[in-house]
Image 1 (tube, rainbow, N blue to C red):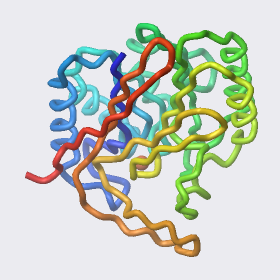
Image 2: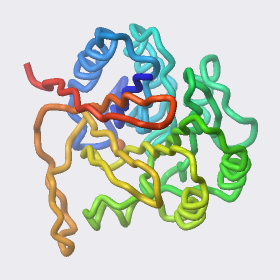
Image 3: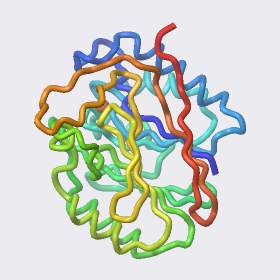
Length: 261
Ligand SMILES: [Fe+2]
């Protein structure tokens, strides 16, 4: 099973809301999609861990869908803090089995993988939360342990990057409840997130965890605990490709896409 992990495209149709977003992000996103579409052997699915758009308008999602249209495999998305629930649901409900109710949670299958997508959006805020309804939904799903690997997608990483100012603005509610669920679950588990704009990997509560980078803007590595202002840097975009076996054995590869031509 080959799963690519992309994140934080921040595509905008009119003008960006976030000043750091590169103005040619639509063109850059097309280049990333071209690379994903030409990956050989073909990918089985693409996990897209939020901030699909920068402003969350219907026009933003229409542009994003047009950019993603060369992809012939499922693109499994979750909302980021720059997305808007209603517009995202409207744009992707033809492809993704969102639960009814307020939150954009859903379960999907990719071959022998179970994918559980979680909504952590607090509209109008940068940080995220797992609402009681979403935690209950996840608990119900994890109560049915499968021997096959499970992949959890969410935008705000519950596992720290070590960059304090970013970690403090990440998942601010539901983190400990999620940790307890992961600790109790004994079968292969992957947790994929975004939000940090810098790719990293971690082991947290027994699960393999990763944050996908962003082609829209990239945060410089800075692990000084007392630093609150983080600098942006320009470097080639890296997305991850996970090669996951039926028993949960896996390999992680980085695939680089130059952003500037
Ligand atoms: Fe973002």
